View 1: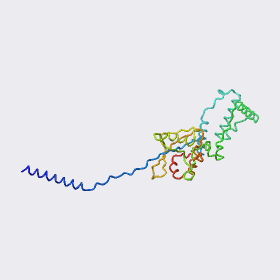
View 2 (view 1 turned 90 degrees about the vertical axis):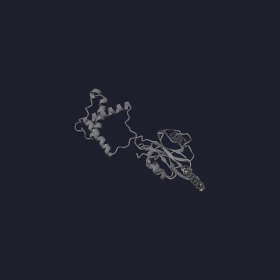
View 3 (view 1 turned 30 degrees about the horizontal axis):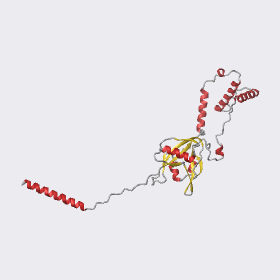
View 4 (view 1 turned 30 degrees about the vertical axis):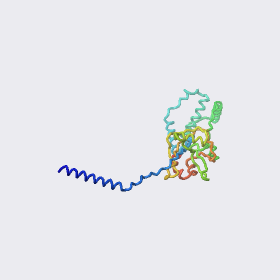
Length: 285
C-alpha cells in the first residue's frame, strides 16, 4: 500500500514538471539587449606655458611702512660700527663709508636726523664728495639702476618675453577655425603608447619651435578642457610648462599670431567656455 502511494506521488510530480516545461517553452524568448557603443575618445594635449615674474612686485604702503619701521629699530639697537678696525683713519674709504652711512641714517630716521650735530664746512664736504666720487670712478662702480618698466611695456609689445616683469605671463596662439580667429594655448594630439607629458612637450615644440628653454613641470595635468559639458568624447588635458629663455616661433601655417599675456589679458581674447576651464589655473599676480 505504501509503495503504491509513493509511485502515485512520483507520477504526479513528473506530470507537473512536464506541464511547466511545456508552458515555459511556448512563451517567446525576448531578444538580448544591445548596449549602445560610445564613440572612441580623441585625446589632445594643451600646454600652458608660463614665464614667472622676473622682478619683485612693488610693496604696498603698509609693507613699506612696516619695513621702514623695522629698519629704524635695527639701527637704533645695533652696536656702533668699528671704523678703526676696518678703515685707516683719514683714508678715502673711511670718508666714503661715513658719507654713505649718513645717507642710510637719514633714509631711516628722516632728512633732519643729526643735522644739528654736524659742523663740517662746505669746503670740507665738497672735498669729501669729490674724493668719494673719484674713488668710485676708479673702482668702476655704477649705482645706476635699470628701470622697472621695460621698453616692451611702453611700446605695448605683446610678443616680448620681457614685458610685465612683475607678473606671470602665458603664451597664447591665434588660429583660424571655421573662418573665425580664436586664441588658445599650444596644443596637439597624443600618439598611441605616448605619455601625456611627452606628448605635451612634443606638441609645444611642433607648434612653437624648439628655440625655447622650456620644460613640462609635471607628468600629471593641472586641468581638463571639454568643449561641451555633455560631450566628453574629446577631453583635452592641460599640462603646465615653464620657460626660462628663448622665444616662440610658430611653425604651422594656420597660426597667424602669438602673444605673451597676463590672466586679465587672456580673458579678453579667448572664448567664454575656454576661459571658464582655465581661469582658476592662471595666476592673478
